[in-house]
View (cartoon, helix red, strand yellow):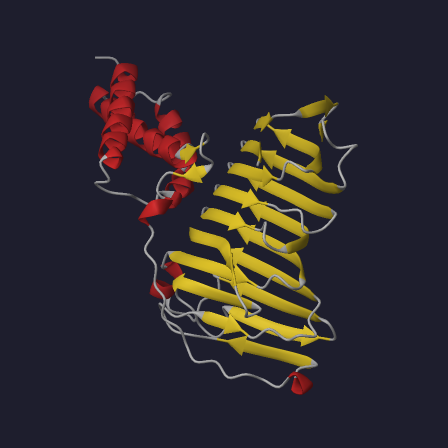
Length: 324
């Protein structure tokens, strides 16, 4: 038997078994770790040039078939028709919370507080009426993260996550609040650092938001349509992401930088959109756009009051813009 036949047989069987079982909700795996194993493909490729016994070649073909099947499942387990992740429905909800004390606004003109809680807790930052602008700096690794609800607090974080005193920091100066959420920060405990994160984030609708997102191989479903979002910067690795934008402000500036990512951007129909692209070996699925060199202008751009400007840089990624 040829090694190529063994490879394709193992590859197709692995895909078939996985998707058959998931159709019956038998299991759901977080395969984000598999991206870190891509150098093994170079090792397997190197074996082709060596004079080795057939048994080893068969073993290499078998392992390569499984690895590429898992990579395929991770990178393409996105439902492009619905714009949702196939396994998001399996996430559980945990609603424990800590007790927070209210600070007087008079004492908050200059604040730099670290906020902490335990596993399965929620974090809250009180909203001050004088806050007009808010900056959210989000840094997340492997895990599942959501923004979808509103809150009377400035921000509220719920979910099955491991926090320590460095995970969330908050400062307030004049009329601007700054929030930093860092899931990559550890307290020195290796087991806590490696724990997969699952969190739901709620934001206040009153301030104007600037959002900076730095993510690894995670799953992100960020619905920003209810907030006054002015600027969004996204730097991501091999992630599956949905970002939904609204029309609360007349202009939104979005910067994307990605590698091996699947990304869906949801844009309101009443907004005009202009996309500047500089991508390598990437797929772009943009409907109702006119191509202008390397850039894309929506057909309704000139007649729209609200504008969304997207600067997109990436490699080996899939991008899709959906109108709603």
